[in-house]
Image (tube, rainbow, N blue to C red; front, side):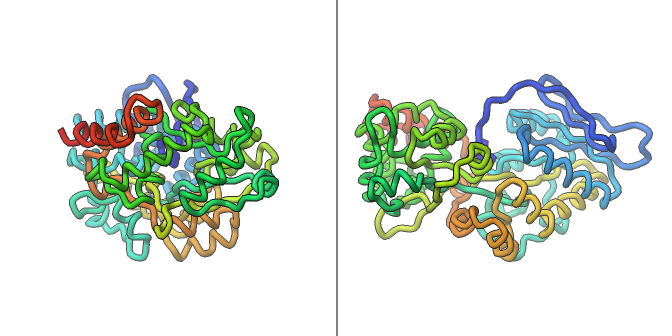
Length: 415
């Protein structure tokens, strides 16, 4: 996703041309260039190369602004390259020991990259994570070493249309039973569905399903546990009853946001990256609560967002670490959160952030319960994720029962 998302958020990506900032310090390119950015000539400064996938605003410009600032403080020039399929690209470069000096990548991809041995141990290099949320620190670790640090993170929540719920006489659901009842009451044939979510055949589908999967108490080590089956049965029931449209099998999170803003959905599962879309659409009558959980359990979900990592590049690694320290500093973390609707990684910063941005209150309050997707299965997470989204597709399309689909998923992930 690409969690946002990006969050992990998956958006259609189009080609765009390379641009150079007015200051001439940052080069942004995307698409067909398969080579890492080359050092600038004649600047007299050390040049660091950087890769990320922030093609969309406001993250694209915010990142340029912060890299420029931190590069100046570290006394380096940073050449930026935006790569939509960043995971594939950096794994290729790692195998040839040609990683860029700085990488901002989706947190579940970190362990695969760290396993190649091509990343700097940031903890040993002096990057401190004391006081950050433990689950966020865990998302940057591989075999006990800190290879990644997040400037901010995100997860999913339930958005609801306040007018529709008031008219139907229902309260925002907190449990699965309440969700089933509310979604059914809010559904008006094919005109309005009670709830929408995005479970396409991709990591984005797993990311969304994991909100119910983790809330049920399921573990990625056991994809076919009773808790996992109950979560998949809930989504199947919502689709089978007509409370959620069958389109959820192909929608991405942006599609869900569009359906919510045009009134076709009364509730949706989505991340904080949708807030600018809602504001742009002029939508004000909505609320946000945690994703419903089984009665007696705490809402959870997958931890979204990116981590900074540094490729091993000799003397330049020291400068790359200086830049990362700056990028994850309290001031920059707070600025990044305000510009991109992320939750800062430091609880002390989140308090100030939540007061300044009240619409993020639910996301701030629930971030501590989000789970790192690699904490249990490590660099094998992509196998587990693919098995999970395959099971969701099979169950919701009706080709397999939830229990049979997840039994097959367990075999697929562990074979």
